[in-house]
Image 1 (tube, rainbow, N blue to C red):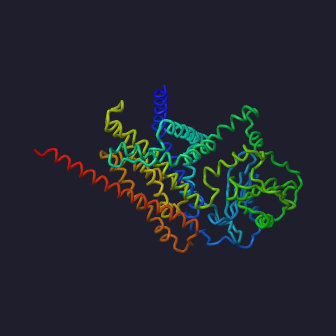
Image 2: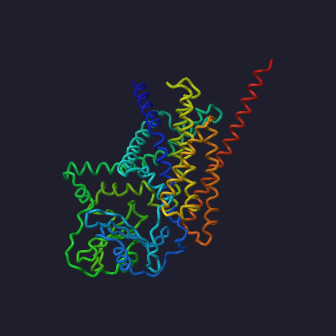
Image 3: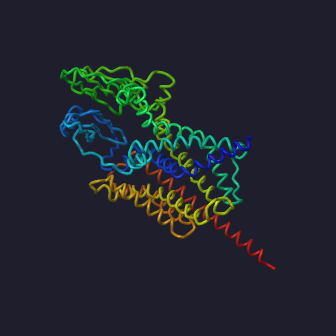
Amino acid sequence: MLRDRLKRLNHLHTVIGIVLGWLLFVVCFSGSVAMFYDEMVDWEDPDVRQSSIESPAVPIKPMVDDFRNRHEGEAQNLFMSLPVEEAPYYRLFASFKDSDGNTTRHSERYHLVTGEAIGDKAEGPATWLLRFHQNLQIERRLGRSLVGIAGVFMLVSLLTGVIIHRKILRDLYKVRWHRSMHLKWKDLHTGLGVWTLPFSITISFTGAILGLVVLFLPILALLAFKGDQEAAIEAVTGPPPAPAGVVAEMAPLEDVITRINNNTAYRAHGVSFENYGDANARYKVFAETERELVRFVQVDANAVTGEYDKPSVLFGALPESAIGRVYAAITPLHYGTYGGTLLKVVYYFVGMVVTLSIAIGTLIYLERRLDGPVGKHSRGFYVAISRINAGLTAGLALASIVIFYSDRLWGLFTEDRGYATALVFLATWLAAIAWALLPRDPRLSARQLLLPTALLCMALPILDVATASTAPQTHAALVVNLVVASSGGLLAAYLWVSRKVRAGEADALASSASLVSLP
């Protein structure tokens, strides 16, 4: 009975890995890279880098008025992000609703010191990789749902993997380096999976929640609010204050922000405007925190008097309860925003180990069918799948680094920077898959794709200095350069060691063959 149950769980574990292995690899790899989204935004925009964001408070009202006057229609969901080291400028966002009821989204950046408009930032590699992780660069609801479903199945795969491996603690350090390739992959897959298990469970659970919320909201609205999604959102965030219909002078926002920064333990990083210019106007100030396991702290302020309420770690109408705190912790747990740069570095490298474990799981499946009696299809079929696998996995890494070069050397000079990034990314990835489909050993194809990836990663700081020599090396840009270069160094070291190991195995095999042939 127990054996049959374990066999079924093992089959489920294998099926999830095969059916969703590539999707899980893409999501985990892109998520690990997107961990440094804020830092990459600073790296890819050297013209606006600032060595320091400490400057006298600049009047904010002229920026808001200028932004509203630039676009036709009524401004809705008006939001301003404040200068931070990774984005040293003011940035305003809003949806503008015209007389026909159509809405368009606009944004504009303003200089840190002068408050003058400096043009909007076009989307580059950082945004591409973040959205690729969040919704696979397809329609938002469909993409996020697929990513959320992948998180659910990854969680199931992790749990079944723990159950079917009965000797986890005993085999935790075991890697049979001198045995077959299949056994080496199996030991690595088990060891890496167990060592990263707490991280993997956390990421898959929080990722599933963040991805599937786009499905939960319409269902909740249908069941409880007769399909009214806005009512469902208000049930969580609280209803917005109704306008009084009386024009009023707004309190200087820069003064409110200065008082919050000086009198609380938090530093404001964004402001949402409600009923701006009305007697019932409110500023919702959002502050980052590394002391609380929440995405942000919210401080509500009266936009007329400038008085603000006590900071709250739970936004909107979320109750001060265990459930409210758990929900508020989901985003920081998933993106590692609660522990500074060091925690992001840990998340990145552990995430890459999880990604490697997923790739090894696919290799185990293919190795057994290429070199053993297992499998229902021909060997040619599994060879073709192995080649696609090599191109897809190694090609994704290559495409992810190539877009940083193309953006710096070409994207900055195009009218549609996002289109250029997408074109180069997809072209590189498809070219890598086509290269891997050529009739050769898939392992060789993977190595040929990983080698330029390693070299390009190690050379990224050189590219940055050569093309942005007058830009300061900010903390954010330095983090990107060091993390990417060190990743390239580790990959190059792996390629060198594995080449030596394979050469040694080939020599041993040739020696054994010559001894067998002796009379």
